[in-house]
Figure 1 (cartoon, helix red, strand yellow):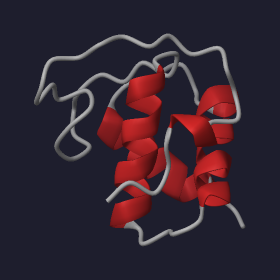
Figure 2 (cartoon, helix red, strand yellow; figure 1 turned 60 degrees about the vertical axis):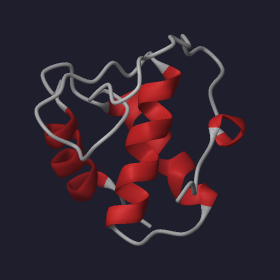
Figure 3 (tube, one colour; figure 1 turned 30 degrees about the vertical axis):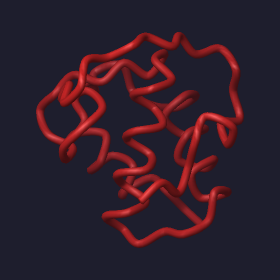
Length: 93
């Protein structure tokens, strides 16, 4: 289910790389796969996946997640599963 798409992104400074089908950077579940916060497809994928896992239904929640990752994600947090934990601790409503 797609809850958040490219058109919902707040920032426009992303790169848009084409990924092969089933690339772990944009499919599956958040795991130890490295995450590039400058890559739009990875940002959209991770936001969608986490919104679905946490049962968030509104695009403005995705925007909050995007802004946190884009602006405040510590440099030492580089894997999808680490971002999942960090976001859960830092996402405030």
